[in-house]
Amino acid sequence: MAIKFQIPDMTCGHCVNTITKAIQDQFAQAQVEADVSTHTLTVGNVEDAAVLESIIKEEGYSPALEQ
Image 1 (cartoon, rainbow, N blue to C red):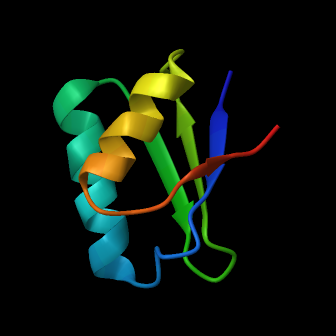
Image 2 (tube, one colour):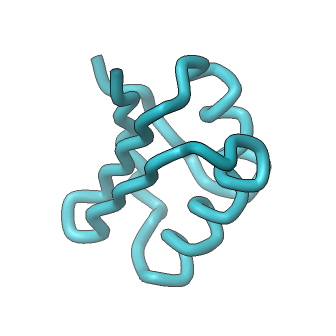
């Protein structure tokens, strides 16, 4: 199951790299896909949305979980 976030302040490749590294530091198996144009981030192979949201917030971004 993939977990999808809307992150309006993810605006460039650097943002994507920062978020991806932070997630993969905690979850090495995470598959992270980002689309800067739509400000969406999809994470596969991780079950805990709350932990992912916390990791993204710790990097200074404002994630909103998509249902």
